[in-house]
Image (cartoon, rainbow, N blue to C red; front, side, top):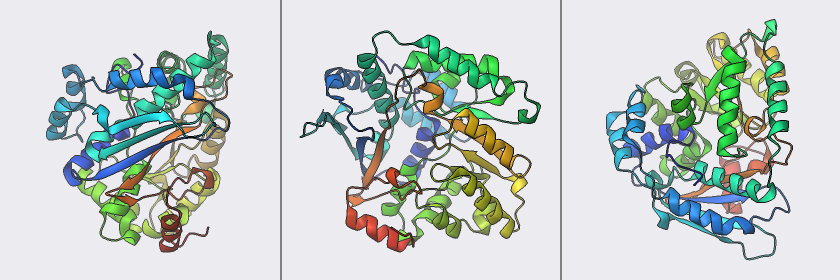
Length: 391
């Protein structure tokens, strides 16, 4: 069994889930899986995938895990009590081969947001691991270890990189659960103070590292259907977040409607209220320059704010970004696939995105066009019009 703990997921799933429990407990959603790599045949893993999902839906939170969650000041006791009763429902997830000869598989999750939100990360992790088990009978861990050591060596003992903070964001696209854990242990031991932590809650608990994360795209997407009107959905999402966390977890996600639309909504109030923002699409250097200029325009010192970069990063790009923005703002870097799936094999580019909420289409309009995912072109065009985004 690949997933043996419900904590084996990204932290932002729990932070968003608490908001759902307290503010949107009746929301109904739909998620869809997509593999962006052309020509990948995932059908051979279907039988094992079905078995893994059956096992996943038997898991419950252990008492020791609940006690760990209670140590976080921003998780409320009623939410942890709810997790003590939580179990994934197998009836809400459907997996089958696509109706074509492309080798694609279809995964659909449909049901109450509160009860389906935890599927995404373990499902993607399972698909990855099963695919690479099928592809590679004897993994080249020696190459993976050599590459990891080279990455770490590019940072340690570099005086100008003393303040560089790199985190693991690689749960969903990891080569395997065992390799992910080895990466965490090696990085913790060798990267030292330059290692900020991990998005994976289970590994954070097990190995005493800091868990990291705030919000993901699905939260702002759902607010397209849950807010008072579409044009205000981004500000509504930020306001509801602030109402729930009262200053904690203050990193805003900036790319659900693109950077220009984000900056239009991220006014002086939000500039002061949030600790910073996270980049996840488009040119990261341009994004950082625009965000710093935006803070300065609003008379907010950017040196007091945090710029988090997390889009397709590797160590060289993170180092270059750090050197560009160090001293001008606080910075942090979340590296995903390049951290946990770099053994010499082509990684899968797989996602599972929310496509509907309360029966209404929802979408992300990314500054990286291929990341846009929506099953209703008319809605996508309307969303562009509302947020003044060129096609």
